[in-house]
Image (tube, rainbow, N blue to C red):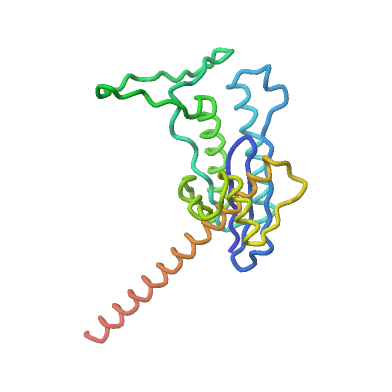
Amino acid sequence: MIIMALDIATSTGWAVYDPARPNATACGAINLSVKGAQDMTAVEVRRLMRPKMDEAVCGLIDQWRPDVACLEQPLNFIGSNEPTPKKAPLLAAVEQPAAQGKGKKKAKGGPNANTAFMLNQLFAVAETVCSHKCDMVLEVAPTTWQTLTKAYPGDTKERSIAFCRAMRIQIPPSLNKVATGDAADAVVIAIWAAGQVQKAQLAAKISAAEQAKREQEARAAA
């Protein structure tokens, strides 16, 4: 069973993991940045990023032939303190007033609208390709797969890198710091997915055994 994982962002980490051959794990990062993006609107940049994601994911699947794909879920919220864009976007996030108790402050922080739109669109492209080419597609929230690395110190990327080192999984030394962290995240996602698939397979075997037992008892009683 071969599992491909994607940590989707402008630098998308990828990993290919086989539970039977963990030392043969491959990983890397896909650079989806667009040349000249500073002179384009966010809508134009996203339009160019989508086919790059399509091509890259198709290439990975054609090369590795994974049975299962696991993708990190995209963001599903927009920060309340989003800055005004330099160029007017075609879509704008409008904050709706919410009922707040006396003395409560409005939450600050979070991703801006462009980041949320970008991640959701890239996820949609990757998920569609994987659904056509893989037997199973899983998605996982960051807070879920990150439970595997909680024992290690540092930020999310540092913990993922430490996890890979502990598992003796080699990250290509040619990757820069950002890409190294993204690739490491993808490795952890792949290993998390392997555990979920194994649980599902075990549950299916137990269910089949129970069904066979019931059928045998029914024939004996007939």
